[in-house]
Length: 351
Ligand code: NAD
Ligand code: UD1
Image 1: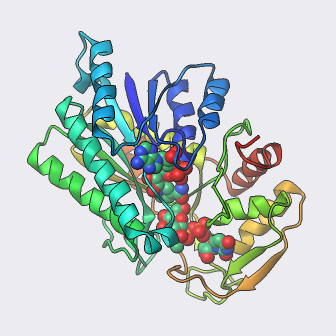
Image 2: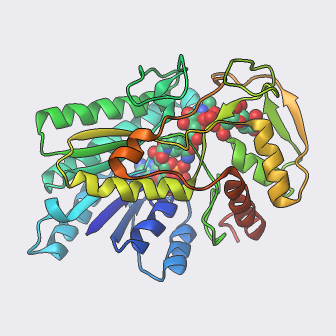
């Protein structure tokens, strides 16, 4: 079985490639390396002892994309593409703040890129797709934990691209029920592969909590700003900091492996939350990281960050029931593996 992985050199993509290869799939990565390094894929090969086919292509470049699928159809002959391939679509831009400043770039990359990909898939009869969606599509939920049937709303262009793509995919399936599509809504992916060879390597100053803490721990940044300790809903802890459902990236990667067979049951469009079902506060995370690393994380309490919500965690029971998937790694595992990655690679993939 061949799996085309768009954005496969990125953070979640590279971890998913490891799981795919270890589960016997052939992996074809399409990535323009706009937010990643080829080194990540080299290390995926090192971890698994298997080869990755790589194409340095932008998914908005339709003729190059088409060329990859043409080659794929020829190499698979006499097997059909429909029954022997699927696409996992990670490629896209993902920074919320940046999307507010550069909405056209976000719509162009995420929406145009996805439409191109879908057109080429349709042309070659590949109609099995796993799409990276996000808990951001739930906006500010009224109650927790969040179930898949909660109302959807978004507050920024990045989130809107995710919701629009979900809608586009539902329309596509309505027009042609032979499409099988899994919409995976990730909560807060963190951590790194246990080998310490791959992990999150953001360009510039990190926006997200975990890579920020890791860079403070390793001395690249002086201290952490904690955005608000005055959240006092029934879901927040006494420390008043934000609560999130942090999920180990390797558990998330396994979620994709579990979603693939579902596509081949003629499932239509299915939606799953990928989270642990547990919320942890920012302060709890800082303490867990200090314990795992043995390094003190200096922090300052700063004002709330615009657009942040007080608390958010998943009800992941649908994925457990229908896919047999459940996150198994703890917050301590997430901190240990992040630290292992960061201390062995203080400058990420840049040697
Ligand atoms: P990432 O930036 O590490 O990976 C995305 C990859 O896509 C990168 O390697 C980048 O070079 C590539 N890419 C971007 N635009 C492309 C294009 N036009 N053509 C080809 N390649 C392109 O991000 P990630 O954290 O691994 O996220 C993967 C997916 O999961 C994204 O769609 C993201 O929106 C979604 N997601 C991420 C999170 C998170 O917290 N990391 C949460 C929810 C959803
Ligand atoms: C962010 C995105 C969300 C995306 C998710 C995926 C924003 C506003 N939202 O979610 O759309 O789906 O990533 O992982 O960017 N924090 C600090 N100091 C920091 C960084 C973060 O205190 O330097 C706090 C935040 O206020 C929040 C928590 O840590 O309470 C988690 O933040 P972050 O890692 O950025 O993720 P989200 O905001 O949950």
